[in-house]
Length: 175
Image: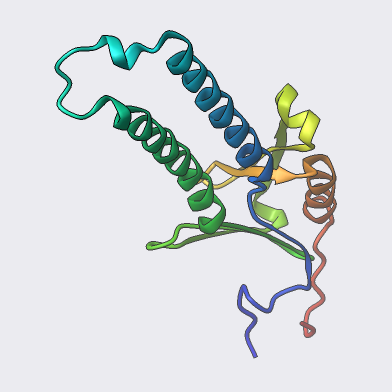
């Protein structure tokens, strides 16, 4: 029976982009912005000083709160789409990177096609123990594949190196 990408090799690690630190950070920033704007509105009473507005002055802070809420939701939508559309699977004999929601792409990298691995971590990523892993392949079509927002990237990169550096020996007549 031929093996496909779903059944070949046992799964060593499965991951999705780790968005929790970014969600918390964006939420805190939005709350700080809302508090500063509210303080500014109450301290300087700017809406009472603006004549001839098309909406009543009492409704302006509500509209501003609605805009701030929409900005927060839209900023989180990008992160949620990233998490929903990317999956990383490390098996005993390959690394698979799946991406996409409507159009799904699946890249399977075998040890023979593996070239190099790079871990990128900013200062904030080091604090929350996340980062990006760039996998370089020997393929002409896809030379760099990025695994975004990986939790504990140094450990995952070590596991990937362990799988990709393992020599493949095939004995004729056996699977």
